[in-house]
Length: 161
Image (cartoon, rainbow, N blue to C red; front, side, top):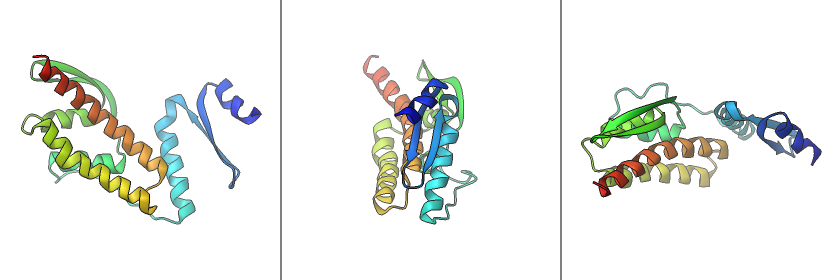
């Protein structure tokens, strides 16, 4: 109990303890993304997995680039706002800008059902096989949350027009 109170008293959000390895990784609030990256690297090393991540999303359609970024857990944190259909939507990740471009020519539900669900199914299947670590799954879920938060707000605005 004592080891869990130290990180919180020090201003950190949480501490994850791997009892078998005797490993303690503290997650700082402002460094959560880096912590997920470190946890993912540790999990991959323990499994002996050599993970290759895409270094560029050029050459992909915008829909496929978004899905690959979600599957890679790729984050481009930046706050801003994007205007779509006369409304403005705040964002915390630049992936929302790409999503806004996609819905200019594609129905949001079609994008969700055709592209995003496929990406999430691939991640889920990889996790079930042990090919995707929990830290990676959490990173991907955070990127997906950014996309879905925007899509939900956009679709709600269409109802209220």
